[in-house]
Image (cartoon, rainbow, N blue to C red; front, side, top):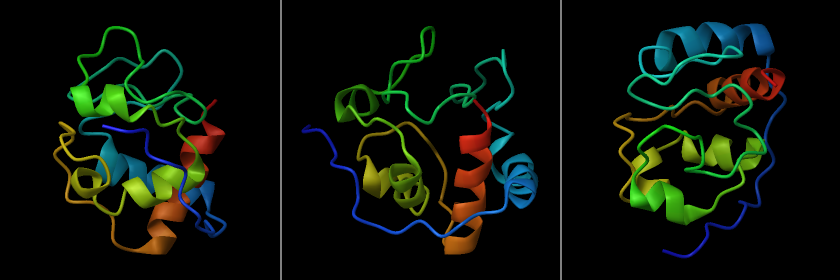
Length: 115
């Protein structure tokens, strides 16, 4: 699978506090986002922005996640969160996605702040 190029999208400005609430409601069942957080069903997302997909040590990623070679950015995450299985076919992430652009922007703002 070839590297997924960074999408040419404008990510709206997000609200970190709203993103924290959304993360707790939609993501925390499978992910942590605090420093030193453990892997759950999904890898920890503290410091995910700027990290290459599939590289958190100790987490069993899908081959598609490892081979995508995405360097996570707000643009990648904004588009990935619409429909993870469509953005990265073969991912093990079982999540329907976040359709609302404002909610995705808030989640991106929150994850950018966690570094």
